[in-house]
Length: 297
Image (tube, rainbow, N blue to C red; front, top):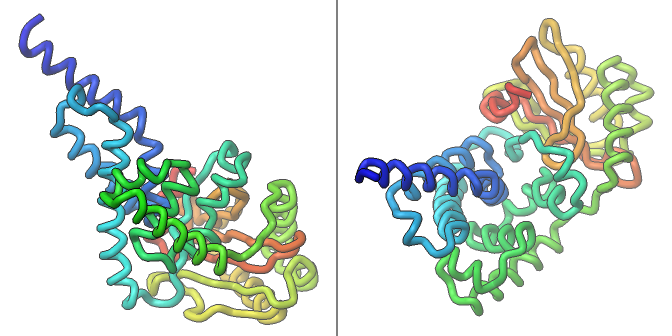
């Protein structure tokens, strides 16, 4: 075997090991950031770091890769939070396509839901990273300490504070997938058909509509509350559908969601949060920069 053969083998091993952990790195980064595009950037930056080390010298590849990705995500989140003050209107997490496998796990589906990601926005970047690593991925306090470069005692304290914050703010929504699917289908039929009466029947009296256009697409810049106002706003939205629209229900963020397309281009996403089978909150995302990852769905 030549020296060139040895180098080539190392490169193949490096790529193979990284590919084995790519989905994990993407999942961690997205839950820490709530931004699919930034999460992809984090995975790419992690690969660049990984390509500069000899994988033979890394005792625990998963630990190394998750450590790099998490620290990069924490730094990216700090910068994002500093820029948030200039965001136009409400900010919502970037929607992602998820598989039915995630929906089968209540814990995993909850960790990627828009409702949970919004709650996590109230945490500091370090608290959020520790919470995600512990609650969503089950890493031990000692392992998390190595990932975020903190003592095990410090990690335990951070995790406790994060859990307390999350439990105090976490809304209680239905998690049953069959109930969510049926309600989403009823909602879509009523909204798309402009049936105001049918729409009001699936909405809670104090339903809230939160829209994220980011200043780049038409969207209310404040939350709309109350069944009458929300239902009328939705009928108005349906009346402004793009030319040749198509609407479909797909798995988004761990549960059923609605994608509105103009031809092949996604122009809006709606995710419903239910209580006792009735829609309590609607997240409507029309910011085109947050929909680019849905083009292939």
